[in-house]
Length: 268
Image (cartoon, rainbow, N blue to C red; front, top):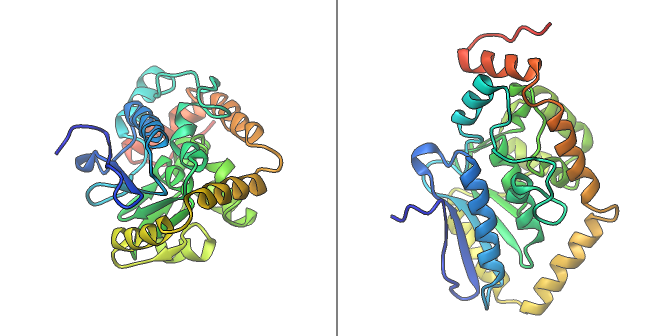
């Protein structure tokens, strides 16, 4: 098995797979993985003959969220864990972290995400960048950032506003509730539930890839334009600005300490 953090397969009948490859860590997110996702998107965009992409995680989970080492660094240093200025727009309207989600949305071809195990926090946001999400029964999801005294800042808010009802998003954001695939289907976050989501994603990808390549690209561009009448820059910038005001501050550090120590948080 390669040590690449994101594996990109060669096109087969117009279909490429992008695979998060930290299975021993449930594909938990590090700064390096975020950058690797951007590199994978650029690699796919430069390929000839790609009509559909499958985004998936190797092993038992799609992605369990931010690697705990990132929270440990935030607790000990009082600073952001990403090693980057989150206000820096490195990928059009998005920063490096947001591009891990938003880059799939901006890729010129349809993206299907196959989900199993967990899609928590940043992992949930990454999957929202896909056009279609297929989940195994019992897959667990969460907008988990509130648990750590933060807000979603990987493009999730900009993406999910077009996917689920506003009151549902607010409840799940405020509570950091963990919910399963069956509820996610009802909320609109999941497109289908399948016993073998990867097999179903491959079946659907083959069907999509059999259509006109130019029409597929035109359809995705048109659908993105219909969603983004007001543009993506403002909500993505707002994510970064509000998160920057939270990272490393007393409430954020107390939430992290309480989560790591397994105790209720005590806010002044």
